Length: 146
Image (cartoon, rainbow, N blue to C red; front, side, top):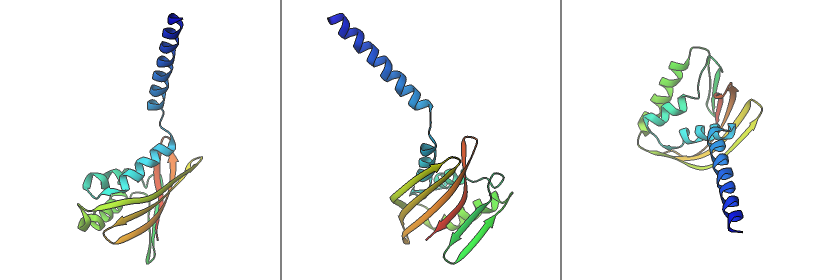
């Protein structure tokens, strides 16, 4: 009886170990988009801005930025301009926090949508991001601030 219990215990431990390894090796699209949510929330710092900008490649996707009072398009080759705009816009807020109040992540085939409600230096802000998958990477297509 004891031998059966030990054998079963070993079998369960092996299965759990294999399951943990498989889970660590396999990253879902939802987890990749959760990394985007992590990059755009929290303390506003240079490294976090760079993390968020890593989801932008105008070679893969043109980017549309929409706010109540403006609408801008960035086409192929505009990565540097878009990065400079993001850094310039966020510079006065370095060291402050964008608190993640609520978020949702939806994936359908190669299209993803991330919705966030953030509390920042200027109050609450709702933003919807549309992303498109290229290979294993997700790239921003649009951001709509409400």
